[in-house]
Length: 286
Image (tube, rainbow, N blue to C red; front, side, top):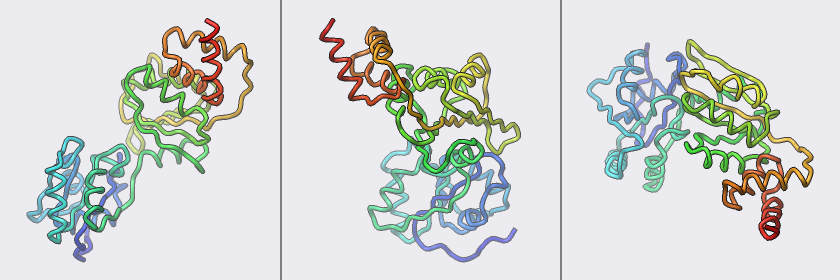
């Protein structure tokens, strides 16, 4: 395959890489990998393998590691290379850099030094999942990974209850069953949802249904691969005052008042401020 021999100007080039099928690599991304003076990668082995698959020669160029555990020294060295006139291509292990992947600190440091920063767009698990989900895509919120602890997860989910966007999460295959139960318990079992597994790969699977159905389907299932979970946007529901009071009393048995109000507001689709005022009145009564 012939690559562009046009030299790159000094700067930082964020290059998206395939999330599964190696054939999803863009031609422009390959041109940049073939022409950059230096290649920085979240996983150098993955980057070298991708270049080998597509016949991109290194010709003595370095492939250096840059990941979440790289310190300020690694950022400073790459910025210094760019200030010296070098072009640096950055690739995360898969998908688009910075989207639940490293690259943010490097991008900020380059911008602070007036270094040109550009992107070669391509594969993204977020966009691929939205495309096949069947959920509304005109407005969406990418949440990324939720906290590992059940209490923190439920509190964060509750805060998202009234967001009028399709919600997009990443999740570990080991935790997806518990996560779906948390989503069902906080957002309600009728909410539309989709679980995408191994997108663009051989065993790609898209499971659609309500949160109740999906929580049951994944509860006792052993899951492998990369997971994206999507939840449909919030809808208005009517809730009786007695239901709010009951839910608050139950939540306040195990949570601080503030957390209980957040969780109940999210689960019932009510304004948090309104539920918190109810919680205060219940506390005074008791």
